Image (cartoon, rainbow, N blue to C red; front, side, top):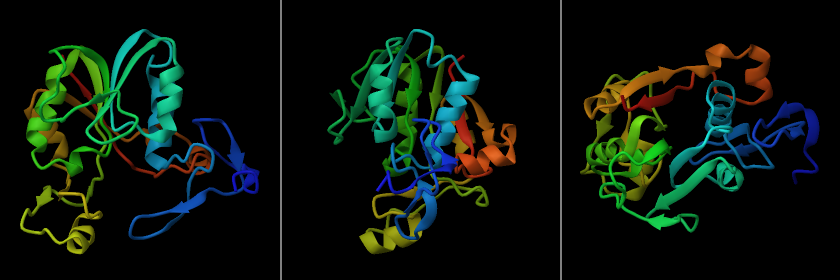
Length: 228
């Protein structure tokens, strides 16, 4: 399939391979030309990669990393980086080095220089407890990137625990296993547990041609958090 799609129009920045078209993808509604055939990355994965590559020393400096529910697009690549002391964690993922509950982590305070916890918190009933744990184990001056599905047209996060039917949850929250829809107040929630938060629209730093070439979602926000 990947070979059949080879071309020059679109490029996955994660592996550098180019295609005439990406694959379709969608949970409830299919989106065309968004799933890179080689890495199986989506827009959010490619945006994060470009940000890390261009704006941080992630790929060059010695760092202790904690990665929740590691994405296939990143896992093997991060694991191979000699500069990283890389630990993965999750309750269910076969890629997890440590099986752990995000609300009760078995790690010491102030341990990790970088934490990735992307598209995880929307699954967690007590996300306040989870974010407090993330803050606790992040080292001083460390960076945490905490992406979630977010409706920026919505001022406040919506959660209704009375909705238990899987089909109804999928209809309301986007997936049957999501417990809320985050609004713009998500950034304030992160600040409330101690994080210094930068809501970065990194696509503003990219050209229109790059956004199209990498198949990114214009206006997508990266929640980049620091422990000062």
